Image 1 (cartoon, rainbow, N blue to C red):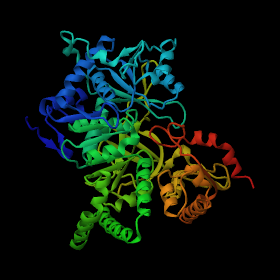
Image 2 (cartoon, helix red, strand yellow):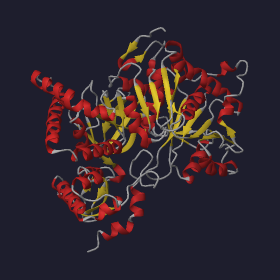
Image 3 (cartoon, rainbow, N blue to C red):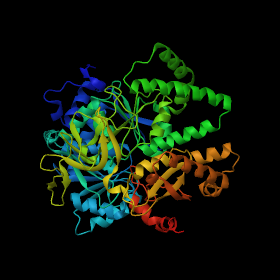
Length: 614
């Protein structure tokens, strides 16, 4: 096997021309040629207890060729949109690449999307074909086959035996590859659409963000400039492919870097996959890091005092080491020696139990991250490189970097593919090579989202410090303006409340009111552990714990501690402790685990009103 030249982050770099003008089919062909035997994709076909199947990059290239022929036989051609509604399974990943090789445009749909959202997306992108997982997903799509306003003609069903009257996925691979078919493959141009990503819809209808090969490659190159990873690094793919972060990290960057993707179809099983793979990189939205930290804190609370004291001492050494790096200072020889010792003796064994002992790059994005959570992981020597961006910026626009510097609590500095500035009203503006083409319209046109000077108004509020680091405040439209005229960031207050391990979720309310109130939810992992450590029975679940006087008193102390760190206008005067977690399945969170504030406020309108009654 030949070895191609490499650049930063272990990325192959042997293709001619401008790296920003490469296309995904070119990367696939390069990987199959230069790394034919290297693993590119692994998955468990029979659930979390099944054996792993692996395709090499040569196998991926040949399989997607056959699959493309099957889709071509169904009438899919250049420029056609195809809808994909599946979990993170091989059929989804491979179909995505096969469609791109045809010149078609794959469009992933969140598995938790409501029927009206699916209808809107199908009508907006005018797709004639959808690929769905199984019988449980076909009902809503079947109605669209007869909808006069939707051009949908065919459904392909991935699960064997569940296709009914629709096209079995396996049948696509039985289609013969016609003579001369290869001349129709891999003809994408840099300016062609690579995908359409629909926003997850925290409010209003999802908008279809059109992203080209050039925009995706610009972002990939910019990310390579701020991270340092081993060659052919592993990536655990567990976020939905409808999320721009997973499309970049789980599809496009692996093709760019010839790395190895492990598919995790059920996100609740990601911890088991992490323990198996022991990845060098791990990305999680803030809620994932919050849940992980709550689980670890719960375990720590059960440890004997002498053992916990050793761990706390190790945490302090690690945090001191991280603080030197954050300031751009070289730790002293004495600190290096102490850190090496506690890392080897205390921290690595704990991280190894969770499969995180090989992590060299950990990151988060999507929403403001609690500084408390970031500092907690710094105690393990893990620096979560918080980043910021959105679907419209092809993912990351700013990032902290172990190479270029970091500030805990910030979202880093602009990556090479964009410029960032803050307007007079605090709104963050972005322009550059990785900013999207615009929003897809039902007639196939693309409506630009840029102003006359090429700037995208992001809707996020923040500030840029003197060193060029961006600090997020909140979404512009989510800022609370109290009846006294004070502007309050709900995310800032919510993160302060969630500093206490018992408080897993929080929503702050108070627009046009004289003071703030909050809805709080116990953390499903930390609350039972805390209760056990304090002799409280846990067999009644979260509802019983939320009613227990000891739990309620501790939550009260947590709220008081948060208020002590907040200004008077930011303090929470009253709150209600709820009995059930919020999640995508119940509608309070988006599939990317961001709060749907409007949904929560509507669902708990009586509770919120009651908090203002005397």
